[in-house]
Length: 209
Image (cartoon, rainbow, N blue to C red):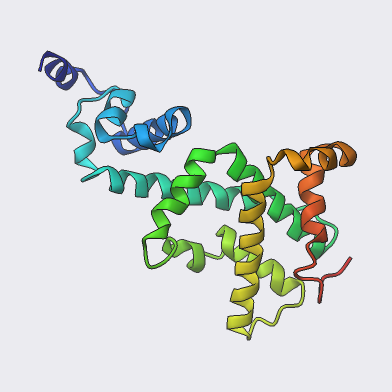
């Protein structure tokens, strides 16, 4: 009771409560994992009263949705920065894949929440398919550049999903000890990741060397 009263009387200095709560949730995710996340824990981490999160989020699920949405935006930015200096479409595709895996491995808890929050919904966040700057659309556009028929909507979507699944699978498996000798032979993890993407052969038709 005393702790609650003290917290509620504590002056709030963040300015943007919603932003502060999302940032606090991300810190807790990466340090303690999703199981440690609650609105009370996030409030404590942000330095606000236990009631404060309810001004923006009705429950933990809604907070996690907001965190996941930010994760998708971060992934968009990561792929936007990738592949700009690629000399061929094949190299660009590999760069997009490497950027995806590096994002997943650099933000493991956030990455898991992104997919956990999407799994029970009818679709991924709307902007993933509708925004041409999204990570998904960048992969799709690279495939069109590689020779995929943009009028074959089903075929193009299947190819984009195949690319996405390949990157997702490698993100899950990249840390396996069985691959250490390849990383050593190739000169590091990034060279290993790039080598895997360049040897997948999923999109050999139409890709220029």
